[in-house]
Amino acid sequence: MADLKAGVNQLFLREEELRTGMELLFYAYREFTSEPDEILGEIGFGRAHHRVIYFVGRYPKITVSELLAILKITKQSLSRVLGELVRQGFIDQQTGARDRRQRLLQLTDKGVELERQLSETQRQRIARAYRMAGAEAVEGFRKVMMGMLDDGDRAKFTPPAPARLATKR
Image (cartoon, rainbow, N blue to C red; front, side, top):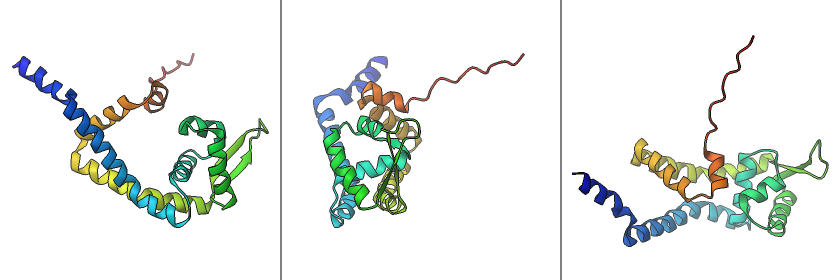
């Protein structure tokens, strides 16, 4: 019985299964981005704008350096996209209190509304898939996605070890 289980567990590593997984990712990504792409197209923006809007909304007061590290794009690319978003009133930039060279980014009310519109169908799509799959499959999905991340990014999603409680004397 143990041999059968070991054999079954390895089926997902076969070439066809790996290619099916890749193909599913392509299709899922296409569907995941289709509705936001329509909204972005109506206002002359693209996926780069969406990613910036999303992460600035997710992490208010994020620095430009932190955003560059998340997106892994060039300063020039971010500058172009960020400049448009600032000029059109979706993102506000503030100077850092301790470091005047630092630029802290946050969504304006207009940016919050755009982020909500862009993310709503994506949240609904993920929630529907999670409900259909069940808790065990969701945990498996998270493990697969975590396994695809680089170590540095994976660490962002790994909860820190519980801190020891300091005893007061």
